[in-house]
Image (cartoon, rainbow, N blue to C red; front, side):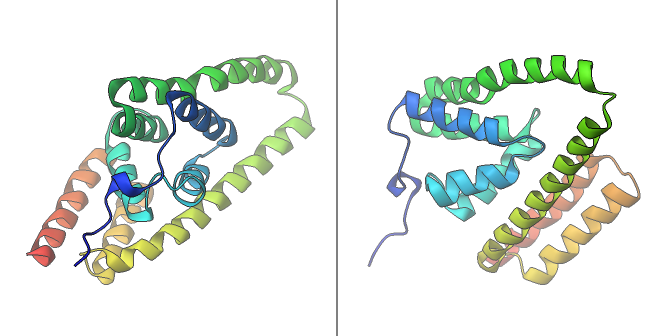
Length: 191
């Protein structure tokens, strides 16, 4: 009988420098939304996480205060190198992009009124929305192995969309209510 694979059987960052460079590259690719890039890099290219582990970690990162990808980077850094890894991953996410953003802010302040610059920014926003939607579809494959039946997952997602996007309920209350419902359903089906 073989045991199920654990997180330690995945390839892992070779060093703190490898971790720093990986998250710097991620941060530099993620203008307007990093979900698509992070999932592709960490799951498909580097294979530091399985798709299921990524979804679980991403869910935790979303409910923690602060930017989701920063939370995720610290979780992954801490998993492999402890506190030093968490701080290194955080530095990778913030250091180089911070300098770049400051430079871009200076340029934006100078050229914000230019119609071509405004058009380019609108185009980038549309591309980001498409990348996030495509990643969501890719990640939905993992729902087949979820202990909560697919119909319930779809219903919870639809109710969450209606409550947050259409009825403007506070996200924290919706997460507590629907997340609690999801936990109860998963617990019932795992018993």
